Image 1: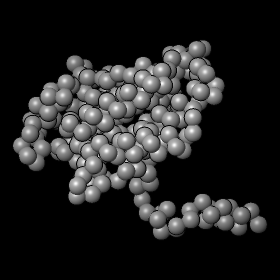
Image 2 (image 1 turned 60 degrees about the vertical axis):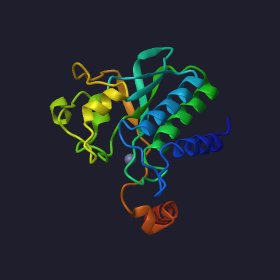
Image 3 (image 1 turned 45 degrees about the horizontal axis):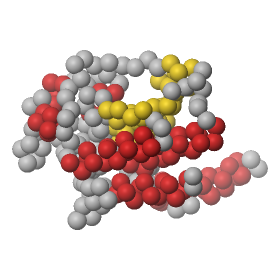
Length: 213
Ligand SMILES: [Zn+2]
């Protein structure tokens, strides 16, 4: 597998799902493009031999069982939803990077000792409904269903109706997994350091050299 090429192809494909005529990507929670993107990721997970399944609310998990310590999970991933006119590297890059990294590790080293899991989170942006972190809150067992049961988007579409329309529902009870030993999310920088410093790694290297003098 050519890693860079694979990442680019997956990003390109995902960027075509929810592409917004006014610029960037608009892939809002429980929209049709949101579901298409999750299905694309699910297909990719299956293609590389992962078990890929959704939880009740629409978080997607791809899993490779460990050979020696299957009950210990190393998890990685990010979110699939976007803001309105979102950038191509926000969220979906983390999903694609995680998926491709696990694929590469598996091709190189075979079955892992611990279980590896890739998550494509349902929602982190708060860009459609007046709620945020719906995906991760459910995943870590702290979602409050009462907070979303009466909310609607700017067009008056109710959260609950849209969730049901795409085949998802509330988790009957909040649960927290105890098997996750580490979590890695690769995400674009939220601040401006890279942009203002332009060549960040060089600056860091330069500082490190100066500090060592
Ligand atoms: Zn993000």
